[in-house]
Image (cartoon, rainbow, N blue to C red; front, side):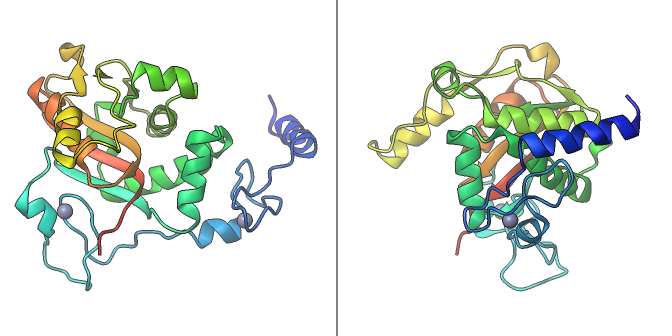
Amino acid sequence: MSVRRSRILARIADLAWPRRCPVAACGRLSDRPDRHLCSRCFASLPFLEAGGECEICGMPVPAPTTHSFICEACSSSPPAFERARSALSYADAVQELVQSFKYRQAIELTEDFGDLLEATLRAKFDASAIDAVMPVPLHPHRLRERGFNQSGLLAETLARRIGRRLDERSLVRRRDTEHQARIGAEERKRNLRAAFAVERPQYVRGRTILLVDDVMTSGATLSFCSAELLGAGASRIWCITLARAIRD
Ligand SMILES: [Zn+2]
Ligand SMILES: [Zn+2]
């Protein structure tokens, strides 16, 4: 299709389905081509700027430093992944956007989120060293309930943009650990540890794998997935998330 023709079609699509900015307090028509977040809301997202971060989990350092730094949590119990980085702090409008992406199926946000993930990936990792891009898997029950895996959509977009292989089948979730608020922290951890498994070790062995998730909270999920992949012979695990909770 010619550029002119595709522009005309995009214009018609905009008239038929106006791209409204999904930030509740905004709701303006988006001024970013083929995206939903308007430029003002995009620019005011809580970006995790460079200025010093934990070498392992990417937690921002309290005061800017040029020294290498490893945070308290990573020193006391080192995660299984080599490095994790996130685009945004899980705060303000980001919580609202991620919730609507996940539970209200606002999948039109995929490309907006793809922009953020791609920029973070290119700034913090060597994309050419990645052999496979894998989402944190969803349990089949949740997949049926929700209709899609939000991390799968993000992984797919990212893999396409950096031209690396998407692998949604080698890492699987055997236990449904999502609604376990009523059990204790220790039991929750035990469940999570046993939740993941590798089904196709031949696609994992010797590979550098990029794990993708929407939000990193404690990092436990990503660490258990990484441990499982390393156990199946992966050579290293990098993790990327759209947002992360920032501990005080
Ligand atoms: Zn806006
Ligand atoms: Zn850390």
